[in-house]
Length: 115
Length: 114
Image (cartoon, rainbow over all chains, first blue to last red; front, side, top):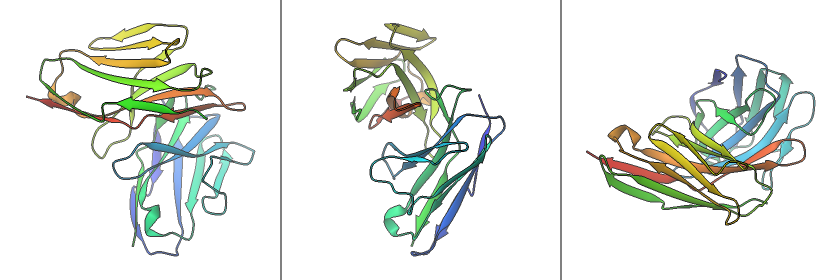
């Protein structure tokens, strides 16, 4: 499976500010995904990032709040904008295996705390 | 959209006993069912998966069964060990306009008591 890294691993931010999370993969992948995992909860898909096209957002998530970039086949960023304490969560990127998006492998996650 | 229900939410077993986690899904178009294990503070790790054309799959102490008609699938762990303690997530995957969208269950916290 691909080696996936995320930066930062954790951060504490003030409300009203923005944080950009980076996801780097050691091989080219077609699909990259961003998830949110609130404390003690399951994983919720925020959006799907396909290189060269606009990200596809799930119900309840909007581009103004969670802008995503996918400049190439090994890298993506997720920005959490105008943060509030409710945005405190773990944010995980995942990648599909090769050209398949069904089997997904996760990055180590970014633990975000908003004060 | 897809809805995946998972039971139980917590499960305690004695070391050496078996553990069973059950999930149901709603979308008959779902065709791929992965299971993930998440240890505290770690990323979810794929432990086993099954596709809709298969009824059962086994990998050492772990097995998964799928009943497409009833839309349910289960994870079976035999001879449990303390290192099996973690949160387990089932998931169902279906095509969503050109990519496979994975919907996760709510998770089962498994505790194996030595």
